Length: 160
Image 1 (cartoon, rainbow, N blue to C red):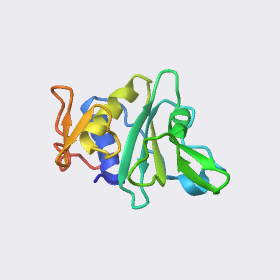
Image 2 (spheres, helix red, strand yellow; image 1 turned 30 degrees about the vertical axis):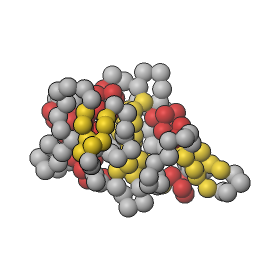
Image 3 (cartoon, rainbow, N blue to C red; image 1 turned 180 degrees about the horizontal axis):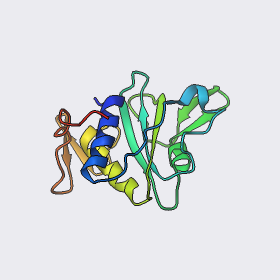
């Protein structure tokens, strides 16, 4: 499973590959201790966000582009449950692991967010990114033709 170091290396590799000024990866936002007191890093900006579990394994990568922001998009996955006094996932599609940390990656132009998101999903294979992919025997099969396999860049990503 991908960790924070692999996420940072993948972002660095993406920027180098496409000749883009490097994107910043935020500090960790602790979803459970900061939710009620602090905004997400880069909350009003366009870009990508990554949820990690308590052991710092990558769970999910998403994007905010065009008519949205990182704060608006990332905030749709969780809500504070006042009766239990804890953070819970929204919707019916609950993840296998509980998200604990959020990292944000603001982009320079809104159109870069979808491309970066696709690249990170393709490269890092987050287990909760399921749309458009079919898992067969632990392997991910891309539904679209021509995509690079999920693990191709695992050992070749440069250090950030």
